[in-house]
Image (cartoon, rainbow, N blue to C red; front, side, top):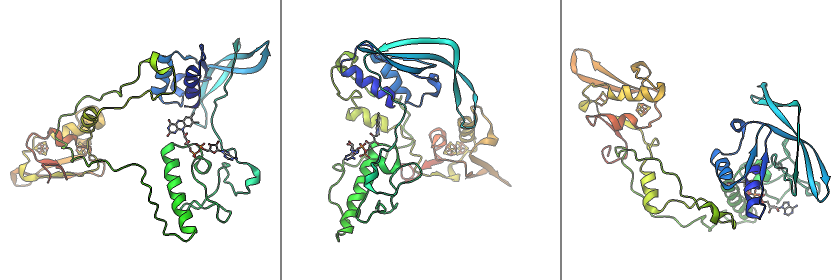
Length: 312
Ligand SMILES: Cc1cc2nc3c(=O)[nH]c(=O)nc-3n(C[C@H](O)[C@H](O)[C@H](O)COP(=O)(O)OP(=O)(O)OC[C@H]3O[C@@H](n4cnc5c(N)ncnc54)[C@H](O)[C@@H]3O)c2cc1C
Ligand code: SF4
Ligand code: SF4
């Protein structure tokens, strides 16, 4: 998202005309789709299948010589490589050009720390201690480009390791956030509500600063969205004594995987017991990921999720 973030921040810093030049098509863009959509919504122009070939000064401005590209066949890397289209050169003038083509660790040599083949700091996985006694490292410098939450987790791990290194117990008091009140388990039998989009700030308000664009759900909406959880962490239990052998579960399950009703591909199997025409056996194959769809659709209450109201 580096290019998209740069463009959106440029708008907030007062740039009036902001564009992104990308040598592939939208399909190959590694940025998150919702971020790209928000950027376009805010006024960022995205020039696809184009790449700069030369940057020069043009008076007080910068001139980018560019060329259109087309995508060649997929290569060994699994991506379609862009190749320049002869005769499609064009120019763009700009006040500022931001080169946002990826990130890498920029580690000063005089740190004297052993590095990995990727140029990141080498650490022991358990303690995050580096090859230099008493020096610890965490975050992007160790993992390469990652996320804030991973950097925070590494920071906590390093703090604990340093405490131990200095003779402490390794227990660090600081909690990342106050514990919130527990929410009761959600019944997997509730009807699925609609997926809601997170409310966002109107464009004319958001461009005047660096405020949070996504406003988050209020408590009521958050609980309603959480109720859509399929609880695939809880196993599905079958109660053969309630089963009527209707096969609804098998049909629903197969539809999820095949997009068509096909009893053979169902991950739940219901079989009539030999010599006992009204008794059934319910089994699950290894392919069952406990999505709970069969539980929702069993009309006889023969399937439950362990830990939900009906499953006890
Ligand atoms: C454009 C962009 C968008 C991102 N968006 C997201 C996102 O939406 N969500 C998310 O979770 N993550 C996002 N990330 C990733 C996230 O920012 C990083 O994973 C996170 O900041 C890593 O934290 P860190 O503490 O390891 O490193 P950094 O946050 O990079 O902190 C390193 C610090 O060290 C300082 N420093 C560097 N060299 C020296 C030196 N020689 N001496 C002293 N200080 C030095 C730097 O100035 C910096 O302050 C994004 C990253 C980028 C680049
Ligand atoms: S829980 Fe999901 S995957 Fe497993 S049998 Fe039921 S519908 Fe199929
Ligand atoms: S939907 Fe319920 S009653 Fe019907 S076969 Fe499956 S487990 Fe048995």
